[in-house]
Image (tube, rainbow, N blue to C red; front, side, top):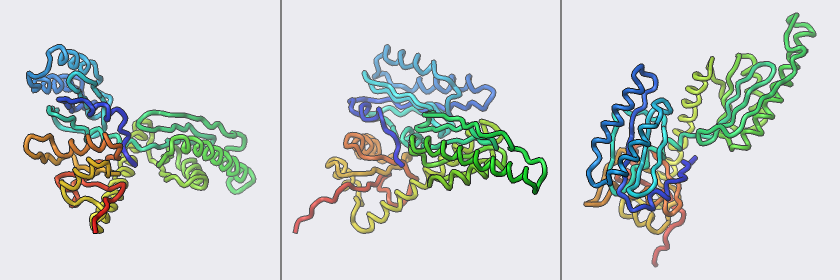
Length: 334
């Protein structure tokens, strides 16, 4: 359910300051490469003069080498004298933006990573399937099931040939389901998507559902691009369900006095390592005096205390853009 935050803790352990770039990478447009270059160049002009020129030059060369079609938005975060993180995310933006301050703006990356739901894609036909297991946006494992082809065609509907064909199809589908189970267990998949001709698709999906409890959906996609679009749609739905469940849990905890209800209580709980899950909304820009943005402070402390972090919509339980579920409750005096 929670975003993989590897690399973020070592980043926030640096004193900063930080640069956070978000640059649109609209690969579908005819002038995509040119627009990406222009947006990247323009946002670089907004960097203040506190940065060492050689460091900015190196960073610029790094970003200039990025492809324009690896995702909807390029995100780069750089710590002065420290590391740089560069990732492409599927959350699109209209215009490039630069955030410069004492802490990085990690929420966009966290939100994108929490949508990288472990899943398995099955491209099936009546003789077998190609199976791909994906975790954290990367192909982890593949398998191919080449089933029986003898008696796979029906020559006389209603006769013995039809029954033989049905039996062969079912055997092939069961073999596919077993292979899917192995890969799904390997990545702890939360979703299995089945594509292919209608008859094969339905038989394979039914066999998989009879084999494991992971959610199985049939996708109407005729090519790899269509399958990719369906994967994005369904994994986003899983992530949205996760957010809804966490919000409900946090709302219940606040209602029973088992969660912070003010900014001061939340910050204290983070300092004490008391927070199990931090919920934040990235559009919240609340600051207190010279301090950095509140949710960036909360994210840093959550990373330093190994708390889970989840980006959620802007709902009523968020106080200045943040809320929390606790690991343990503080003792109260008599």
